[in-house]
Amino acid sequence: MTYRQQLFDWIVVKEVSPCNWVILSQFRRRSDAESYHQMMRKLSPNPIEVVFRNRLTEFGL
Image (cartoon, rainbow, N blue to C red):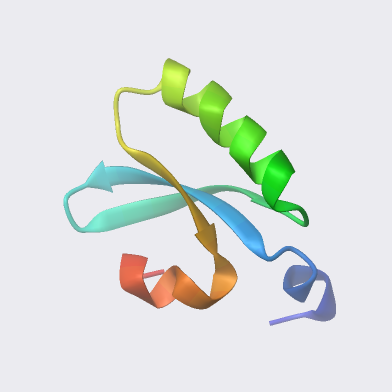
């Protein structure tokens, strides 16, 4: 993982199938990630979550 990737701790992920998640975007601040999450939740029928980088293994990413 590069230094630049380490700067973005908050990640918004989308469920594509029951076991597959896709990273939609990465943010430095939780508030930015939450705002993006709210917008995307209205636009997408699939579940979308905000995840801290350390929890990515729970989503299989």
